[in-house]
Image (cartoon, rainbow, N blue to C red; front, side, top):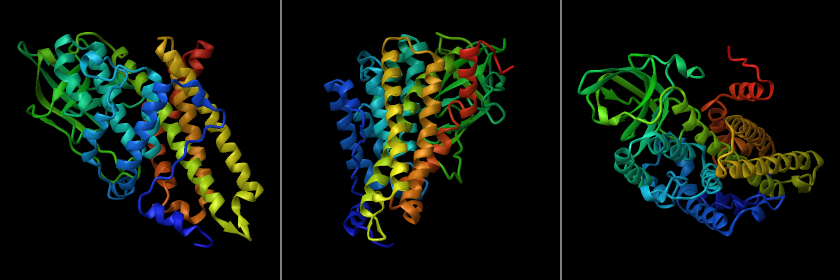
Length: 405
């Protein structure tokens, strides 16, 4: 392994998290004391509870179920939703910072929290009845119930309007049939917010509870990405859904797309966290790794990599901060969210690949987080709007021309 600091390696092998957040432009000065306090408390929890175990769980492709209670306690589930429903009552910048700290550790863990807060709790809050809000939101916020979001189908990903999942009005209940796939949290979810077409072909949301006859959630195996996150399918075979489980407040694609905007916003912060972790690890390694009689941080090509990394990270930080302000003001557009999601995942992948090179051969091992982040980000760049689809969303916004048809 050459001249590596073995005290550093000992810390890594013992699961010690040495992360220090990069902040080249003093972006922390733009945050409130409350923002920083909450972020730091989440960071401390991640370093204590997640960092020592994440590699083990990723290696064995298993979600660490025991952390769910802790995620609820730190406010990771629906922090931006009102306190009257047992949620955090925080602003969108706080929500983003929490997602950043979780994905700084692992994208799969952030995915679990993001799905719960933005794709399950948010539609219930935004489109649900008062009874549905009071029944589900407090338990979801604490992690006493876990949820998933059923939109993507085997043959309909980027084109959700083509969905085949449907339900019929049977008088005293609805009868739901169809299937969804690539569903985070599905193998252990207690409820699923499912989007399906009624007999008129209109898209509506239904809350489907585990235990309903004909509802199964087979797990997806063999993933090389998001290995510490549970992924599966939702299968509906003549599932009887009570009529009171229909989300009354929305019809059409507006429902699921509004939820995805909230989730994509969180991803823009989360992917930045992964980039920060890769940069921090690469910077530290470059100072410790000695070749030709001096640390590799002293060589021009390594400095070029690090300088380009921190530049892109800084730009992404400012993009997130401004977008957070727009979200809090209710002014953020879907295209602005698409820009942040697309840009920040792209720079995170670039940073991860450059960091892998700086780490040399050690970069492919589980002793450093680089390869795990890189594999995870290959899912993040695709889900909740592919890289190319977000490009077309931006293109339509700036030209007024729809390239989707």
